[in-house]
Length: 276
View (cartoon, rainbow, N blue to C red):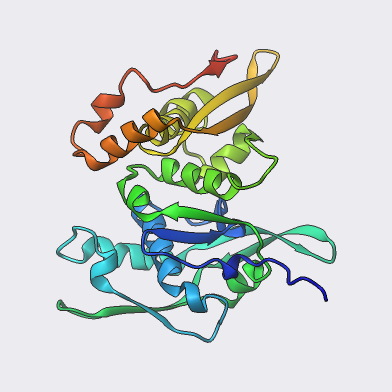
């Protein structure tokens, strides 16, 4: 008897966890997404999980579950517009080789007019579903942690590491600077100099996850001559004491969190001279 191939969609969703097929992690944003857009997409995937691969299924989520603290619906309405117009570039395999697929995330969203208890109705695009139907690698995201992360770059890095942490023989990821920009969702033309990308996107993302996450992240800059070409990231499980500190920080007020991690922005770094 042939063993059934493992599928990402066999993994059950849990109240405080969100499953993301690895194919949808670190995608290229052809339309830039905000932190709230990324958070909301994760919540929409979680709510739709049991029927995610059914392109005909219309999912629904209570507005209250995705509204955060916005009483006027303005932020939610903007997020809905952004997600409805979002196009991404996914890596897929067909005919035995790798391809890039450009696809929309959603094909329809119905949002209520006015206030009151209501639902958001939505459908994922068939092209997106088809790209992940045979997924066998996934990221498990903690909902409480995801909602505490304060930058889209940190959330993107968290998703990437979670998609890799259960791979038995991988604890590092080395990518070019340009590939890191793409995977962290840096808008085209933004932060063009490496020093700016490092100081405003990459290092703050690492620092925030080291502060409130359950992995300890380190990185090394790989140079060609004097110029940084690649960044290699290493992740290891935190010690029990470090886990306790992260839980304490996660449960503490967000006010002052940036100040509390000031001075610990960089983890162990080698070859750390930035590009001039």
